[in-house]
Image 1 (tube, rainbow, N blue to C red):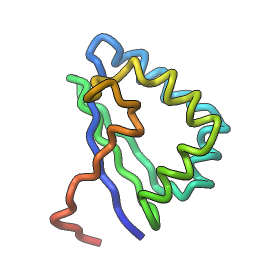
Image 2: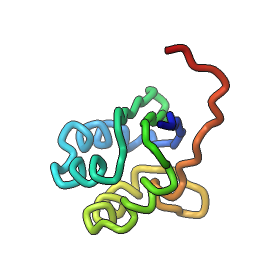
Image 3: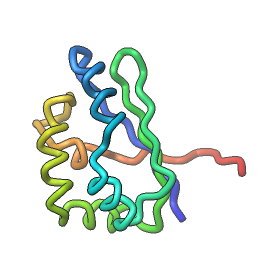
Image 4: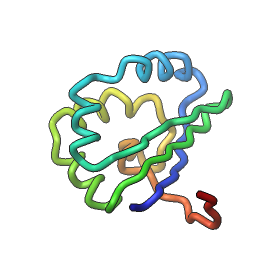
Length: 106
């Protein structure tokens, strides 16, 4: 099992709407994430728009690829893209770069 943490930046003017959208994530999106191997997935949002994501998975690359193959993810990413400041206009799921884990306590 691998622990994955990543950072993204939500546009300040979209923070409230971003919170609202995540209070009602589509059930088919939740099912797709689970089927793709995303476990214990959390998002944390700071008041300036810094988004910290955390998940556990057996293989992060495989989990990303599995999601990329789903129709629901394509729809979700298209709707979420305007919320983010991403390099080169990348989709949020393409801009996620895992941070290096330097310590863990069980």
